[in-house]
Length: 192
Image (cartoon, rainbow, N blue to C red; front, side, top):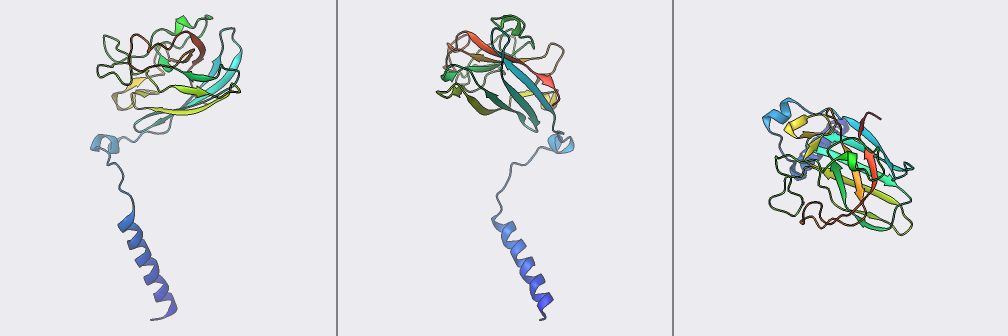
């Protein structure tokens, strides 16, 4: 066997070995495979009660939900409830115009750990460091930016907002898990 043939045989055997030990991935349903999601992006400026810019968030569509990345500074240290609210409006100092949590049913039941939960806006708590900085990444399989997969869209007619609360969310109690006042708000906008 010549050197070129030996090299080709070695490459073929290596490819077979890799294929044999390669991880198995989740198989998409025929509907998902027929209509793959093109990456869609959105962004949001995080502001405090007086309108000062505290940071930003980027949102990116995936085939199974939305990845949210948040960076901010000047926040109180500790754990804070973080939710998607139903209206894209941060125009008042208490951020009440952002409405309630985004939810998928007629009745709103809060809590990632609540078996009866219907809030599609529930997200894990975010942790702000001792120096007031926040750098976090969370994923929600409950939402979409534009309506993919039958999930609740964030960029609908009235938009949506990200809200950071003063306290941690216990993910069970009603109506907002004891998360307290709204201390920062970000209107989700398409693009960027």
